[in-house]
Image (cartoon, rainbow, N blue to C red; front, top):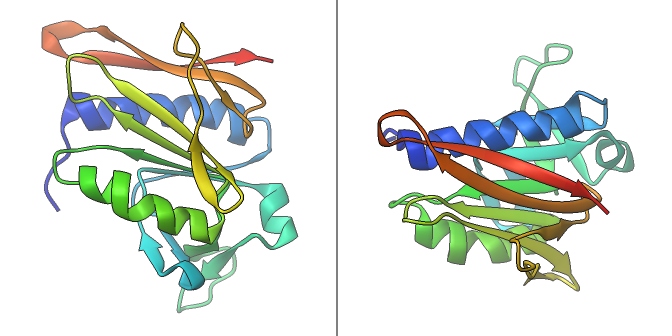
Length: 179
């Protein structure tokens, strides 16, 4: 694995994970997983490790997704998620763009993942896409004039912003506006 770009991959991932943790895990709604979280859905020919994965407890309880125990079968120890997480976030990199934008979305849709977020922070302007699953395929949530898009998972509008930081880096923020 090649290292990820600090300011176009690592920093935005940390910002999104931090805010999603505050909105999902901290109030006890579910889990937020970062990196190296294996997600599988055999019926969708899917086996991936997305940048961020959100699983609501209600989805676990309903059987939409399940935690796969490690081979040692120790209590509370899991190595994989099988089924449809509630949200997958992919942050584009030079080596992942085709995979993240073309190959994976149809498989995520077949697996039944309700929301897919794509963030491309590589250029002069970052681009955030929120895709919502409807009738088996993703539809792009259209941003308003201020770049807000509706997230069914979060129950309101979201947008990703960035501002210049120290020594040509960027600071990112996931902003949320309640409906």
